[in-house]
Image (tube, rainbow, N blue to C red):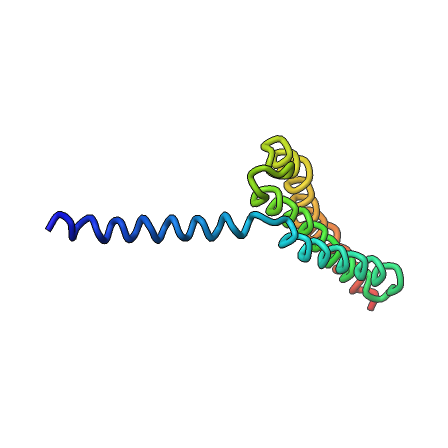
Length: 130
């Protein structure tokens, strides 16, 4: 009976080890993070073009641009957290720098200051002229 009780526990432990191995194997290559970062770069380039060449949709372009800029730094933080163990990106100093200097200030500025206080206020006053 004691062998039967250990068997489910051992199976559960083996399943957890298999899951952790699977997660580790997903982190072994930085190439898996290259595509999302390139997508953010392309979107930023398109948004800059939309901002420069569309006067009527200026506020919308600025709003989308700030959200995308914030998303880029959130993605960069995710890359640094989930980088392979021996990668430069995984060093605690780099992760802390990306978190404290890039991600949090950009997130706070773009999503908590630009959107509500700049864009919404501008939309309120400019919409009176429409």
